[in-house]
Image (tube, rainbow, N blue to C red; front, top):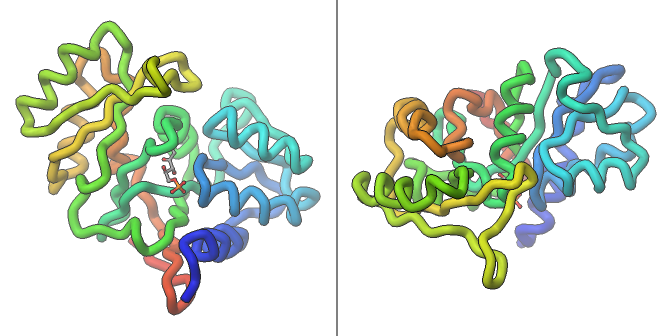
Length: 224
Ligand code: 5RP
């Protein structure tokens, strides 16, 4: 029986086949992506470099000798590789457990293909069991908490010790429980329009085209 960590290693390595030689690869954030970055080091001389979705991934990429480009220095990317907190049967995801959702969505939008790497615990019928991360402008927090209450959810400010968690963009995160997101496209469009929302962690407009799912039987490729 493989551990969750071993499943993450497997999908991280399996994602290498989507990396295009001579190109710049979009790189997500999280413990599964860390396995991908470690595997990518072996290909560092075959790629131009990466566009990263967080300071943490940037540090890891650079430590392994992989050049990191600013998103504005480069055009469209062939592929973006990232993990997820949940993924449904259409490739729609909840992301942002690692608080990097805004830059993740930006790099995903700049890429032709999103390859999600995840262990099988992330596969769900309907999004919403994992608390939905929402990056918010701090002065809007109180009103946004009330708006999520009206939807039937419970929104809590993410903390780091006694203080609110601060993202790479200097903003805060709400984690929302109690939602059943059966229409992810509609939900993402609606919440994205609420004043003070920077990014909602539903990735439906930027959903995955492929998911490499780590299972006890090996890596399964889901195409959406
Ligand atoms: C970070 C993310 C991650 O992709 C998501 O939280 C999954 O992380 P992990 O691979 O550690 O389970 O969205 O903002």
